[in-house]
Image 1 (cartoon, rainbow, N blue to C red):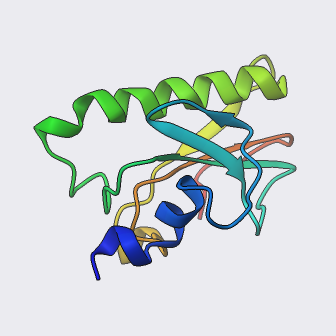
Image 2: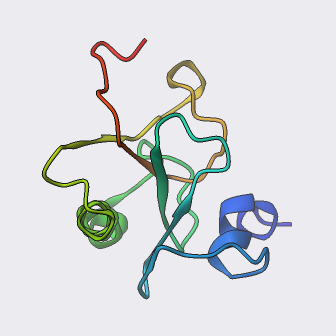
Length: 117
Protein backbone atom coordinates (compact mmCIF):
# COMPACT_ATOMS: atom_id res chain seq x y z
CA UNK A 1 0.00 0.00 0.00
CA UNK A 2 1.12 3.52 -0.68
CA UNK A 3 1.48 6.06 2.14
CA UNK A 4 -1.58 7.92 0.83
CA UNK A 5 -3.70 4.77 1.06
CA UNK A 6 -3.03 4.24 4.76
CA UNK A 7 -2.46 7.84 5.93
CA UNK A 8 -5.20 8.95 8.34
CA UNK A 9 -5.12 12.52 7.03
CA UNK A 10 -5.38 11.34 3.41
CA UNK A 11 -8.42 9.29 4.42
CA UNK A 12 -9.94 12.34 6.12
CA UNK A 13 -9.24 14.51 3.06
CA UNK A 14 -10.94 11.94 0.82
CA UNK A 15 -14.03 12.06 3.05
CA UNK A 16 -13.72 8.43 4.15
CA UNK A 17 -14.02 9.06 7.90
CA UNK A 18 -16.99 11.43 8.09
CA UNK A 19 -15.01 14.36 9.49
CA UNK A 20 -16.77 17.72 9.09
CA UNK A 21 -14.68 20.30 7.27
CA UNK A 22 -14.52 23.90 8.47
CA UNK A 23 -12.90 24.79 5.16
CA UNK A 24 -12.31 22.99 1.90
CA UNK A 25 -11.20 23.71 -1.63
CA UNK A 26 -9.65 21.61 -4.39
CA UNK A 27 -6.25 21.47 -2.64
CA UNK A 28 -6.83 21.85 1.10
CA UNK A 29 -9.20 20.87 3.91
CA UNK A 30 -9.47 22.08 7.52
CA UNK A 31 -11.09 20.38 10.49
CA UNK A 32 -11.11 20.53 14.29
CA UNK A 33 -8.30 18.73 16.11
CA UNK A 34 -9.56 15.77 18.15
CA UNK A 35 -7.18 16.62 21.02
CA UNK A 36 -7.39 20.43 21.18
CA UNK A 37 -4.59 22.35 22.89
CA UNK A 38 -6.50 25.66 22.85
CA UNK A 39 -10.17 26.70 22.67
CA UNK A 40 -9.66 26.96 18.90
CA UNK A 41 -7.50 24.19 17.45
CA UNK A 42 -7.91 23.44 13.76
CA UNK A 43 -5.75 21.39 11.41
CA UNK A 44 -5.23 22.53 7.83
CA UNK A 45 -3.92 19.85 5.48
CA UNK A 46 -3.27 19.45 1.78
CA UNK A 47 -5.49 16.86 0.10
CA UNK A 48 -2.40 15.44 -1.60
CA UNK A 49 -0.04 13.42 0.57
CA UNK A 50 3.11 15.34 1.51
CA UNK A 51 4.83 13.70 4.48
CA UNK A 52 6.24 16.92 5.98
CA UNK A 53 7.48 20.37 5.09
CA UNK A 54 10.97 18.90 4.74
CA UNK A 55 9.65 16.27 2.32
CA UNK A 56 8.07 18.90 0.07
CA UNK A 57 9.61 19.78 -3.27
CA UNK A 58 9.37 22.42 -5.98
CA UNK A 59 6.17 20.84 -7.32
CA UNK A 60 4.53 21.52 -3.95
CA UNK A 61 4.97 25.31 -3.93
CA UNK A 62 1.38 26.06 -4.93
CA UNK A 63 -0.20 23.72 -2.40
CA UNK A 64 2.04 25.03 0.39
CA UNK A 65 0.79 28.50 -0.42
CA UNK A 66 -2.80 27.22 -0.40
CA UNK A 67 -2.27 25.75 3.09
CA UNK A 68 -1.15 29.13 4.47
CA UNK A 69 -3.95 31.00 2.75
CA UNK A 70 -6.44 28.48 4.14
CA UNK A 71 -5.01 29.09 7.64
CA UNK A 72 -5.78 32.79 7.15
CA UNK A 73 -9.28 32.05 5.85
CA UNK A 74 -10.04 29.67 8.73
CA UNK A 75 -8.90 32.27 11.27
CA UNK A 76 -11.15 34.87 9.67
CA UNK A 77 -14.11 32.48 9.51
CA UNK A 78 -13.69 31.63 13.20
CA UNK A 79 -13.31 35.31 14.10
CA UNK A 80 -9.90 35.01 15.76
CA UNK A 81 -7.88 37.15 13.35
CA UNK A 82 -8.16 40.32 15.45
CA UNK A 83 -7.13 38.81 18.80
CA UNK A 84 -4.52 36.66 17.12
CA UNK A 85 -3.73 33.05 16.35
CA UNK A 86 -0.69 30.83 16.17
CA UNK A 87 0.20 28.69 13.19
CA UNK A 88 2.43 25.69 13.85
CA UNK A 89 4.01 23.28 11.36
CA UNK A 90 5.76 20.43 13.20
CA UNK A 91 8.37 18.63 11.12
CA UNK A 92 9.89 15.42 12.41
CA UNK A 93 9.78 13.50 15.68
CA UNK A 94 11.74 16.00 17.80
CA UNK A 95 9.29 18.74 16.79
CA UNK A 96 6.31 16.59 17.76
CA UNK A 97 5.05 15.53 14.33
CA UNK A 98 2.96 12.43 15.04
CA UNK A 99 1.10 12.15 11.72
CA UNK A 100 3.38 12.06 8.71
CA UNK A 101 1.22 14.21 6.48
CA UNK A 102 1.99 17.92 6.36
CA UNK A 103 -0.46 19.84 8.54
CA UNK A 104 -0.71 23.30 10.00
CA UNK A 105 -2.16 23.76 13.47
CA UNK A 106 -4.25 26.90 13.97
CA UNK A 107 -4.39 27.73 17.69
CA UNK A 108 -6.38 30.58 19.23
CA UNK A 109 -8.94 31.56 21.80
CA UNK A 110 -6.57 32.19 24.71
CA UNK A 111 -3.25 33.88 25.37
CA UNK A 112 -0.55 31.65 23.91
CA UNK A 113 2.73 31.87 25.79
CA UNK A 114 6.20 31.96 24.27
CA UNK A 115 8.30 29.89 24.11
CA UNK A 116 5.76 27.15 23.47
CA UNK A 117 7.64 24.44 25.40
